[in-house]
Image 1 (spheres, one colour):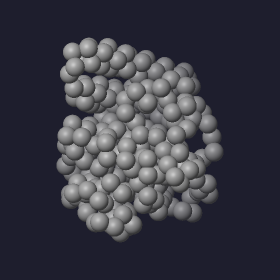
Image 2 (cartoon, one colour; image 1 turned 180 degrees about the vertical axis):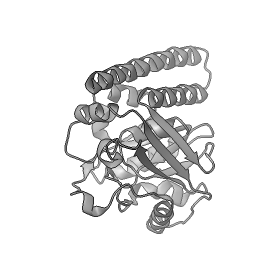
Image 3 (cartoon, helix red, strand yellow; image 1 turned 120 degrees about the vertical axis):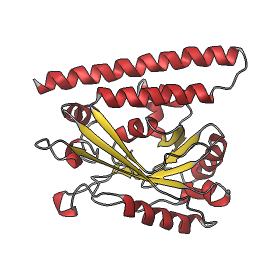
Image 4 (cartoon, helix red, strand yellow; image 1 turned 90 degrees about the vertical axis):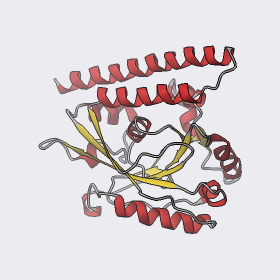
Length: 264
């Protein structure tokens, strides 16, 4: 019975995604035809998608702290692909993602057209290009969110940050906002770090099916109360890691799992 329940939820998420994206493309075409800015329309449709997708997957989003308005450079920990849904539901933002996402069926095409910045993590030379693209992506109407851990995790702790993509907030006056994400499930349900966080070596389809079986998933976003600034990106990285670690509510103990990093 739970498998049927999960299947219906997944189909509904697909329908929501395609429906909202169709509306985005239609509005985008009209705005471009009349040479009008598109950022506000993009923000509205992506925020709508985030809220509807969260509701469809039975995700209840809880927000602590002040939600920043653009322009901003946001740094967050990374636990699951649903981090994107949760953050889109609250922020006017785009994201930095690994280049492999651009090749995913349907989702890759959508990601390319909504302004996601892709990085080839296997090529160090790609960092300079991505840092330049990041600086062009942050506007008065749209921020950018980075997951500097570079991978998802079980949520025992905040993983070490990669400082290479913090060049823009380090050299600009903008600095970096930060937030911590964590999840929980209802009493009696499977532990959240097993069913929500995508760290085990299983396929996206298998994990999504397991996640969709949950009756309720609580997602908490805790936003920092200040902007972190430093001209040295490595020092900035350490400051952000410290502040996010202080906000984060660990979801498991290192003794609970044998963690093998899953690149995302």
